[in-house]
Image 1 (cartoon, protein in one colour):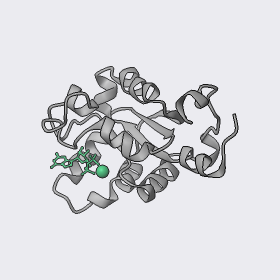
Image 2: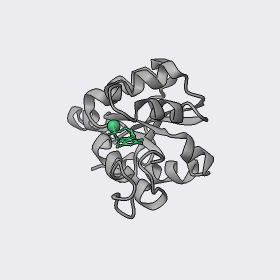
Image 3: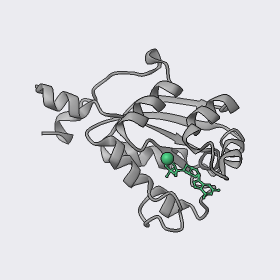
Image 4: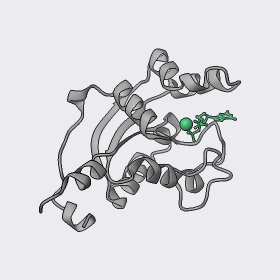
Length: 160
Ligand code: GDP
Ligand code: MG
């Protein structure tokens, strides 16, 4: 199957996701990964780690002045996290839809937060919100050599 330049660029969009400590503790790792695989996105990075305070503070730097910042850093460092990079056409915006609204009480059923969460401080998963933040977060959490460039054989059945 041949891809022209435009398609290659569209398919190469990447986003960063993290299954937060509540998602890991609740045994939702497989369920959450399943939803992105099912949608047709390609996994290009995955690691399981305890997040350092330094990494947590950098990741949530934009929220440094918010009242919930300290609690957020305490929470994200409280247990293991699954860090993921996914690739595919429109993956940044699509992943945010699959994840659902920040407050799980307002998140639609069918979304991860809508199906599994009730509290804004325990909303299970992080997803990058724009192209620039996706690039920053991918490079904050992963070294280039930790990312795997590959094309699933099913690609022509997912993209014209
Ligand atoms: P997201 O992009 O949907 O994850 O939401 P934000 O970027 O606005 O906030 C980052 C994270 O901070 C959220 O996922 C929540 O875990 C947490 N958060 C945001 N707003 C609040 C809040 O009002 N209270 C608490 N406790 N946590 C919040
Ligand atoms: Mg955010």
